[in-house]
Image (cartoon, rainbow, N blue to C red; front, side, top):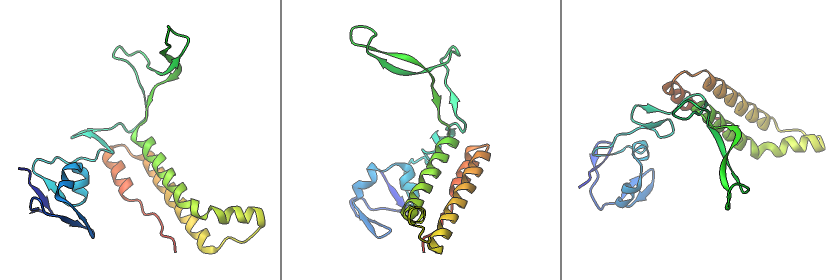
Length: 181
């Protein structure tokens, strides 16, 4: 029998679990990952927790920098594309583009830029309205947008400077997006 613990206390099998005002059936636990359970304060006998965003497995961090891939003999690997003119049914062939594995710095920077765009999007109307109709942008919108951009720039710069996965996790954990008023 699997035993789950919520903040160190055993959870009774076949009972509902209430977390942050939401009630879940006991069976829900079986479908959750160790990292999700850990984020909710739930552990299972034998759980080994690591964050799959940053690690492939225990003590196996993902790469920080982008890497051009090579085969086992050190030859460059290229992106494969479908060529219908090869063989009777077509075939996958090498393109001229090198295959590059994106590192955590690239993926985290892209994540920050996407979040930044999503945070700014609701106020883009004010910017467009100002450009098209010369209508004033409310000061709280200007302040909010500047704060979002400042935080985004701070985090992107910090990501560029990290030298370990642990430092990257610390940077990503330090993000403090501004609140709208």
